[in-house]
Length: 143
Image (cartoon, rainbow, N blue to C red; front, side):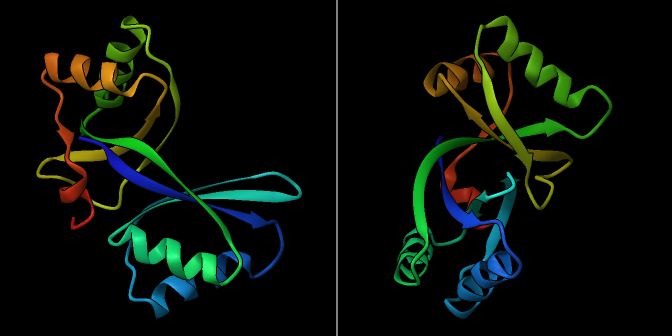
């Protein structure tokens, strides 16, 4: 049920994000989802890609600091209140959402969101108990 996300630490200067995108393109690595958080000095680029190992290898070979994190991909009803339902389930279970971001496409009639959650195994159980679809990593990488 887990999805592997890679995080790339970037200096906050012109061209660094474009450099990462170019390196991944040259390696034929497809970005499926991303989020960028920044400060005045650096940023953290979080990526879901179709080939984590290749992405990590090529980015590290070009001097980037890269790490891996487990996240969840969750189907969210694409209607007003769809996201609130998921967040309410997690809140009532005492599970903290550290961050989240959108995926690049719908899964059927639902949207897909990526969640970084502190108690990931508990989150999977409670979401499934509440009939929320948690998408397998192998499916996410090819969507």
